[in-house]
Image (tube, rainbow, N blue to C red; front, top):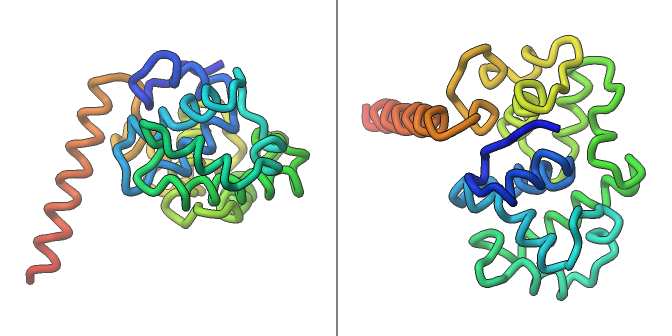
Amino acid sequence: MPTLTLAQDPAADELLGRDPLALLLGMLLDQQFPMERAFSGPRLLADRMGVDALSAADIADADPEQLTIWSQGPPAIHRYPGSMAARAQAVCRLLVDRYGGRAEALWDGVPDGATLLRRVRELPGFGAQKAEILVALLGKQYGVTPPGWREAAGDYGLEGSRRSVADITGPESLAEVRQFKQEAKRAAKAVASC
């Protein structure tokens, strides 16, 4: 079981490390929302559902209104709890339909990185960048390293990079990732103003 520090909260990080669905949903929530809060969302959801581990089948079958209530909190699992609850339910329905409800079936026995990337991109809410980051996170911290995984992850798969959640292993690397993102934003602003 990997030791993750994405939520910066021991209980939330422990769930992320042992529950692949929690990791997948945390990654889903990591957009337009503080990273630590996004990756704490699966723990909040599990607590509100009264379970120790999340079940794709239970979330897929949940009443959408109840799922939204669980997502609203306080605290909310995302700044848009209703739409993210719906997206999480859509992810879980796909997992039930294609992978027997097992998030880890996305990567178990996958022949290569390109296949893994394709499977992740098929998930609702996972665009190109988010899919590459998840492939990098799986490779760097979850031990999912099919041939070609680094290439499939693009720059996020580079050894020693500090670009994304895939590279966060503690407070120091978190600060380095934040610094990289700030520099990238400044560079993008400079290009846009030219």
